[in-house]
Image (cartoon, rainbow over all chains, first blue to last red; front, side, top):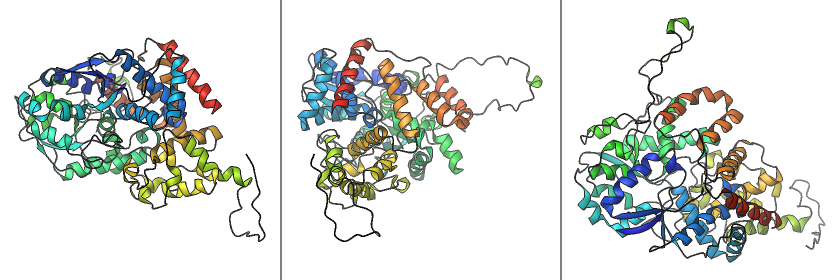
Length: 330
Length: 205
């Protein structure tokens, strides 16, 4: 077992729960010992630093200080979320690049009786750890149900391969690490030209038209390449492409239905794990048809509430009714 | 700060007026660079335009990043802080890895956002409000709170879109992807003390 400190981030305990569940499921077979950083806080995403610099970096660095204090047998923090990974890595890097920032941040941390020495931890993304520490041989050895016949578009988005100040990736614009992991699982991996293009990030919230166009480009390209699904490593990318695909379709009058799962979910499937344990079924654009190609049946989402009895008989309400079988993402 | 006036013998009413007071505005570049995390290298920009050419949403921007950096250098403080460019930037870092001068472009955009908020110069409040609402929840609980963020943001800025959001919100709830209550960290007092100190330091700088 190789030990790491885990910074899960807020998304993994809410909208990207499937990422967390599937990571937990594959950590055993991969020999990953993940120790969660106790009482970690939000990294500020792409929002805090646009409001105020010092508080934003102090917020990020509280996590680094916690991790450094907790570190026992490892100095590596692993983050599965792109924005978290980048924020933690950037804070550490910029405090080394500009000691002035480090002094400010530590003055703030001192108010909470904390300290962080820049450079004392390694901040790495989960995919980097799987590729470079665990290795493809271990991944291959764990495969009991090869994903043969599943055609996937590997999609990394922006913030894991870029800006890559520490040069951890094969290429900041066209990295091949995710492709190689998916190939090791037996999947048919398309050479996806948009693999590190932007999903729109927070623009789905503040300028939806800008985001819809970026989502359209990605989904369109994946469909053109006849991908059964896109596979990602970023909660924001997954959310935008999954939950906003319906709105994007309405905006452009298109009818794409491109599922997107986390790479850890596909690893879990290849390792023979139960789809429910991997959070499969939590996606809004369902992956049933794609997964049927590898003989996986998708259970209904566990948290689905029981249908309520209508408060009044339908005929009493002079209101239009939603068709019973209508899907939320039509 | 010394403010030596630039001597002008020939008036040119056809051109934009020289910044007044001249030196203070021409120091805008230094100010932006100093307020950016790490070493921004903004002074190193050679106006090659690689950033704008690499930018996915540049068509929606008032100015490409290259233009904006030239404006900063020219001391056009108000115009630069009124530009929608930093708010359209999606932090994709394509420009950052392609910039031949290694300018921390995405971080300069964050700096311009915070300066525009402080100077109350950005006209459309949707984006600053979204960031502020996100941060408010984080400061309260230590973690982000998506349900609160989405409802508050949509109520304020897209009330007409709310009904359309209901099925999706319900889908997220039904799939266990959204919590109706926030997650709180244990060390909230200590967390807030750190942020309070950080805000004092920021105000003093």
